[in-house]
Length: 619
Image (cartoon, rainbow, N blue to C red):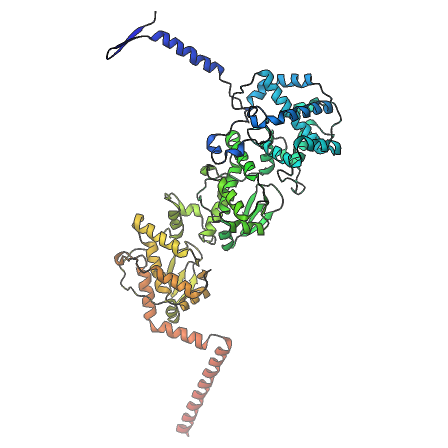
């Protein structure tokens, strides 16, 4: 007997048999659990998740033909079913194989075939096998006709599809992740053929070569420079055509995955301004990129109207089945390199990009639309080393003389990119803070006249300055159009969050050193300043405009000792006299000879005078 429970609320009175309800729920849930398909490691074809579809749903939906069961019920694609059945008939005739043998083969493989699809297949056994057989035979007959060279078949081919142009769309549909049949079933059907095959090789090699020949122009595999497609595929299991495309595109030897410390990267035009050269990587893989010795080598990218579709399906395949992210990361790099039409112009001029789109802005828009919605695994990013090299070049960290960025950062917590830049620029060992007694300090030219020497500080941090034994060592400063923005943001960050003032004090010292264009000229001559601005006056103006509006903590000034030492050195007359003596009388060999001759003459005159006086007294 089930336990009855009374539920009373207001005037209503309900009696519930709990045991009966429990049994009903157990039976209902048990039936659902029984119907669940088993999870299989063979699963490689699925519906693309909503978060990947939302940016461009059409990129995953076939327009001309359905392949496999996922889009079979799409009414817009039913017009191709008769054509597919005609090609099935031609395949059976060409292969000299019976329909019964093909059905029998697929029936034995039905469980395996169903397991290749992530979503439950709604069709019964007969209908499912029919779909797989018709579509697989259709594909193989297309492949055979592609390599046959038979003009009569080619005319029939064009008649079926309404002209060669329609085949382009069919090929695009055949490279959609949701529109696939397992590649192994093509090999199995090829193994049944009893006729003379177009190529006298084993079944696996034949399947690979037929696929390559059919898609080589679509996938831009024609100019792979004697690249052997069979060697590329090797013993890898090909799951379907999207997987085949990815295998062709992705390098066999992948770069190491590391944590991506810097998400931003300069675009192509900015890298060009920083001295990076762009070069086409003529051999290897299509999705390959290398950076070495200031040269960025990228495999040639041919952009077509269906490039976005192909890339989105490759990324979806990686994300859903391979749990890998090479193509995803490669697209991220493209998105960072190409922001504007100017970046596309530069890469087209270098031969890296070839496009059949209407203009450079359309190419830039295509690249920029790919990345949003795509997630990035920062701890397992393939191009982390490459991004770090770019960022070092952008922040002028390239020539830090074996400066180890990881050792520099150490265990410090990085708040954001401005904080990362400050950590890189500020010395690890800071000078002591003392009261600044002397607010003024002579400019660079006046210090030079007083005998101070200027030298580039090769090691350490980019914002470092030292004075010792009359030598002022300053880390090299590269002045660009964005330098003022960058310095102001570093100072603002210090003032608002760190309650520190190193950058503030460093800019104060720069402002004292640089008063005129002559000061800039001197520092450029010494190699301390490098600039991409139009002239020395513009650099002087930039530095002088930084300081007004900023405050200085005189009692806690980082460079108080330096200011005092430089000012004391400046006040000693001997340093100036020594410099005048050196520059006026010992600046070149001829001046030295003249000084020696004059001194010799003076000495001889003195000796002669002494001799004359002595002769007078002793005579």
